[in-house]
Length: 279
Image (cartoon, rainbow, N blue to C red; front, top):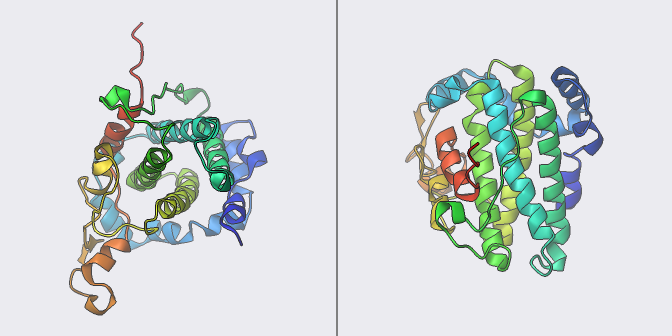
């Protein structure tokens, strides 16, 4: 099955764009079927395990201080950013090579569906969409994002890798809401596939070794952060030195994605969000 067809099975426009109350929206999404849910089974099982509880307890305290509404609006902001980023790229003539337009077209569709779903789940509590500047000017940058395909790809990787870790970092805050946790993890799994695909389009592996970073400086916190990708301690178990015949410590770091705190993600996103005008 092709990458595009496989990802398309994880996106159901009719269900995700259905209007109604939060409970009705979540119920419709749940009725989508077992196919999409299977994608998040490893994460769903981990969320209920005793080892996961120990790992979750070590996450930044901000995850537990945030309400479900705060977390969903946090996720919605990221999805707004990604949707606009890909749509603007697709609308820029000559930026994306023709052979990759279907890939990014589908990724953009997924981000649009994520926005619609999160907005429906939040209802009147959904935040307004920010204004974005993908040159990074709000953060003091001057990137040639939509005139240089390599810059576009680098930002795409940065945004996708940020999104994967952002969802993971807030899982603890949704632990008491089974439905919201389930749907957040389903989106998380799709974002991870996006990240892997974009990394390969840049000629990289689909995963990260240690805290390697080939992106512009603003994205360094994705891999360094409070819990860097070079971390070898998972669920309180130090795996360092245990797999010398299977890639050693580098392979251990490849086997786990680390969470980002809400503060770390907001620092990255703020580089591309124009400050709100004061009343």
